[in-house]
Length: 555
Image (cartoon, rainbow, N blue to C red; front, side, top):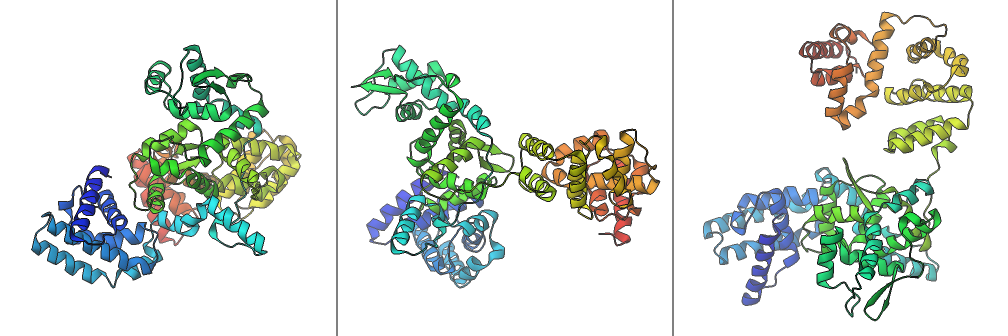
């Protein structure tokens, strides 16, 4: 977004309204300009055209803006005001203004229907409409809840919605991560630097401008003032007037024990999230720390950055949201968020700390049961559905297996996935493959299961145990089944899958016969091979085989 031209336009609009004694809905006009800039390549006021309003009001607003249908007249009125402003300031001519008015007149009765049409909602709007910006106003929600409890009534506002159960990293992992938080380490470094240099702070307890500049240059501290403010809040330093001294119990992070680190992080997170400190330099983000972090906590999944930007515009009451990438970098520096391929998410230590804050507020902040405490179906569902990191997944599997004998583990896993989709079956087979020969009687009992038989034969033969040979049909079937297991990963990372399949993909002569396999995923597997195999002959064979499989009616 070009914030500069939008700011200039809004300043001009305010002056125009005062001169003509015209009431101007500045926030709504700003939103029109923001979205026109973001999505319609409008880089200055003169770029507005009649079609711009049609796309804005009937396509962009329904997709992006969380607004009820009854708000349409306000937006239409703001669009008409913008047209008059454009005409009076010479940005457009009278003929263009007339066409714009005609377009807006035609749009007016259509816009409420467009805003109400859920099929038009974009991802961000669908996501945040379900939650509602007001559900993230924790202070207001707690006040309402307190009033309700005082009156003996239960509050049903969105902000009082129950917090979702969360899975937390082990305390030792949280403590280890806290020890590496850049902002926390810099808070300690700034205190030491000030004291060793005999530097003082201002009467307002802030860093002097020259010291902040020197701190960046000499120490490489990214955010000297927030680091210093955090140090003060955590009691790492004490002041004698404007002179800085190290606190009596000051210790570097590396010298602190686990519980001490966790206590320090609780306090740091409260400072960062609840006190609206100027950490990122982006006012909307700094003032919305509590809402942003609560949003990520409640969703329990990464939020695309574009979706977060749309949400921030909604809660920013028309104020511009700029430099978002820089702001998110500052949050990562503070240790509370991380950027993933899918978007923005809480760090494991921020998730832990937020739950501590919520519990301290008296909110019910439940923990999700550990997969190791459940059955095989729960373990597999958790591994597939929660986007569990590799390290955490390994820990879950190891703990689950540690509570069972090999025979019990194999029995539970294979029974849970008999007749299941390939992805589910594949996870179970992968875990069973870790088991020793003690599980052989259980694995052997599945030789009569058509879908698990090829996997059981492979398991037995790879351990040198007696097993029947795979028939050519079973070789084909298990090849398709293992490729079907990779379908979700291929969708998430097509390039990575293409690299792997190039190194270990099936040969063309095997692919040519795959269409004969009665496997529910055979068409999808062959289409994937046809679009990703670098070997042109093999890719062509896959496409021909997919056509034959479709012709057989396999779905």
